[in-house]
Image (cartoon, rainbow, N blue to C red; front, side):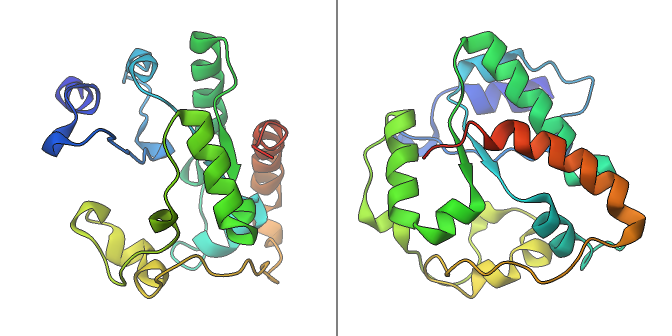
Length: 181
């Protein structure tokens, strides 16, 4: 893991000025030291647990609390906040879909990046940087060229996942109160 962290915190590749990285909470294994997070600018994307669960059960019928990543995300948020003495920027997926330009402008301002309207659209299809799981998780994104309007899920949380859902809600609400508005 140290080699990976060195790549993530080292020189920005390809002569670019920004090195955007999407970290997956379930990749933060307990044995991996998190101190490296202090060397990068952190921001958090959150999503309503009911919508996450509705999406996740399409791929895996009985996800665990750890699979969903809410506990880990809250822990990482606390870690970053304690190291920086600041609340890292948080955006909610619903806010992005309801008003992409406004939300991205707020995020860009919070992380010191110039907003560009080109951030609101992209070519269809998967990208090389999407990783090995893209075809399993990003099939809908691959069909789009811009943000689609927000549509809430009409699916209810299965009773067997109710306790997990409630634990996820606690973490989500903790971060939601700090989201960029």
